[in-house]
Length: 297
Ligand code: UTP
Image (cartoon, rainbow, N blue to C red; front, side, top):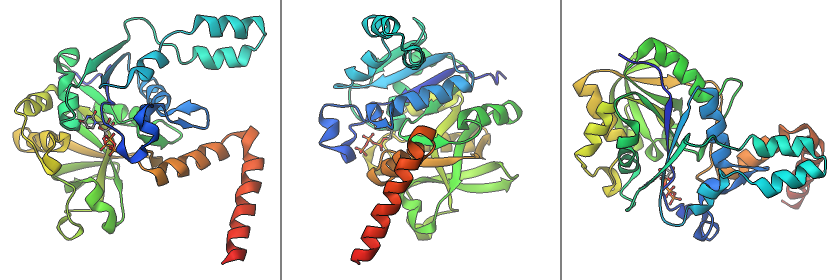
């Protein structure tokens, strides 16, 4: 069984309604943490994990995303002429090699599972990664790299997982754990968006997956699940029954839900504070704001 993972799917066809009105004309994935759009963090993470083929599932109104990965010769020339070597390096780090990146259109927003299924012909018959760019994960070793390393041992299907508070479980797919081996857990069930009382654990699935082509077959049956959408979680859960080969992976790192406004703002602050050139000013500003708010209470 092939355990090398070289293809990643980026489902970016969602409508991003939580960020309206911004997402009326800007794809959510182009929203920027400090100076890099969300999609750049996802691409960097995929590259670090050894991914060489990048498959975007897009939809109407996402052309800014496709443009973002084009080479910008005028801009490069200007920076070169002006001797701005470090900016030039930043710009070039976003270039993609011709043929490395493919775009597939999801014609109707039928759900995340459906978006992944749209990429089936580009994926073919090999394990593949799925990255949701609105889950941004900061860590010493990028999350997908940790997963690819663990996957070399486990094979099968793997989902990134993290403990969430009991009252938050209904926002996630939640794992029913058969065997807890520390970082890796063997899964015996998955429930999409359970009520807190019905949740089998507090271990929630977040937006990184390594999947076998069997999951694509399951998705092909096009069964609608929670919210009337074709759910990726359901297609992975079918594999628990079919092959028993589904693992959760507790990654090391901090995850920000940049699909929500609160998560996006937290990530902006955290990534800003990580930048040496911004840290001191930002910290001073935050301290002043907090002191002023406290004084006003
Ligand atoms: P979300 O549930 O965050 O939905 O999708 P959304 O449309 O992006 O944002 P809101 O909730 O309206 O604000 C999770 C991931 O699945 C993709 C999204 O692009 C996002 O990466 N997705 C979702 C699709 O590609 N197609 C779909 O039909 C649904």
